[in-house]
Length: 152
Image (cartoon, rainbow, N blue to C red; front, side, top):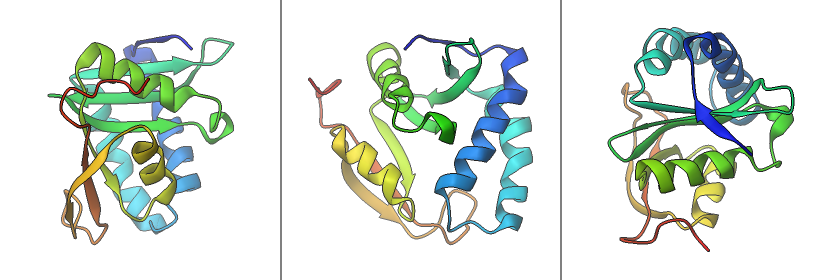
């Protein structure tokens, strides 16, 4: 799967990918939480990401994206219609190999995401009872072991 840099024209579709992925995987969020996060993603996180990579489907449309800042995966979302097809793994591999990503925070209440990262070699370093906005959504702080790189 080809990963390329997001363009400004991709941003509306990336917001759609984010929302559909969140609705499919973040069952602990209420509708009010999704509506709180949506403008933050649209107006802040997506346009200001240091590095924003996009996985595209056979028609060239974004089907997933990853945002990385200072070696940390800040966002990784895949359209639910593309779950299990390798887009998330390809995005993460790109971030590790090309952008030096080695850390990620993951919602503890999202067991699919936790399992995904642990399966690919990340290890739990610590836990926070609240997310970055002070909401009661516990985070696991994960890291690849020193020098681990992409799992063989």
